[in-house]
Length: 323
Length: 137
Image (tube, rainbow over all chains, first blue to last red; front, side, top):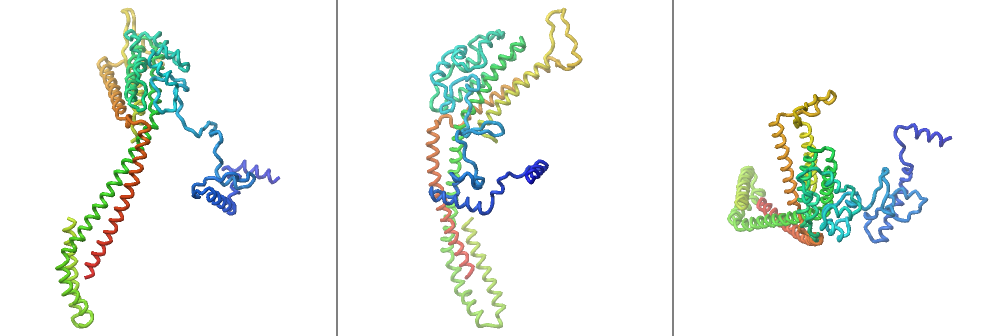
């Protein structure tokens, strides 16, 4: 009966009830988990802040609710029905069913056999498609249906972007060239597309597919380059920080040096001032305060005047030094 | 302001949009021709009143020219961005190496900085004392 009522209220309430495990967060439980964490930290010899979760808690205790669940063992899980993975990696173009134009980037996650990509670069596009099974868009069709009259096969833009690749070295110096070829191919393909469309609109889809391949390749190359760019940026940031730190050091030293010079300057200038102070002011304060009663106010005024004079001189010296 | 790589990707996307926009401009504003004297240009369909909105030849040519210029400008922008991509001459190994070096240099510089700050503070205290002593006379 009681259960039914609870169910009803859970269904009827506007906002969903808090998760059931909220009851586990009692002060005693919190204390217990903190103790366990401390124990774990001392056992492993690591700082307590680094302990995210204590393994091997008894399953039936409430304490398991007080820490995040363990990482999935196989490195993947589902979130809102979408499979997620611990390892974020760039999907290779080939597996997405897109023809790769040009060599893979060194050190990238996509690793088609290097020898195969070499053969692709040596041969024409038509043979390369027969080599790699994964291509979706057959360029033979493009050439067959292409009625753009002034287009000899050697000018096929895809071919131009493929045929002249140098073997990828460890550095990325070929990337410039490759990207420029891709972008030029884009323009050329677009021109061809317009030409085709003006003569036979039904044949344009193949050319549009070419354009699509080129765009996807461009983006893919850029994405492959991202880790490199991230490292490069890190280097830049560190260099900036280094320069900044050095500049700060230099500025601090300069200020210290200046202040020291001021001190030295004061030492040399001080002498006459100190003399005057010793004869007039020093005695005046000692005698005036103790003995003379009637002329006290006058003397104080005079004292005040002298004090401001000295102050002015002191600041004058400082100003001269800092100027 | 994003990094150059993202700028490049955006530029490429914009190029694609320009492709599409240019294409539609030409498709919509081209003029209609007759192939033989017997042909007549059919009147526009009522349900597609503006399927082809033919512009005067000079306006159309000017539009084409402008769009083509824009395309070339974008292409040049892309190529400029490509050639300004940083660190293409460095391999991953070089990068890691220089990162390590920078790390060490940073540590040294940080130490020096702290020393300098300390030195400055000491001098400042001295200066302060001197000023106070001037005042006290």
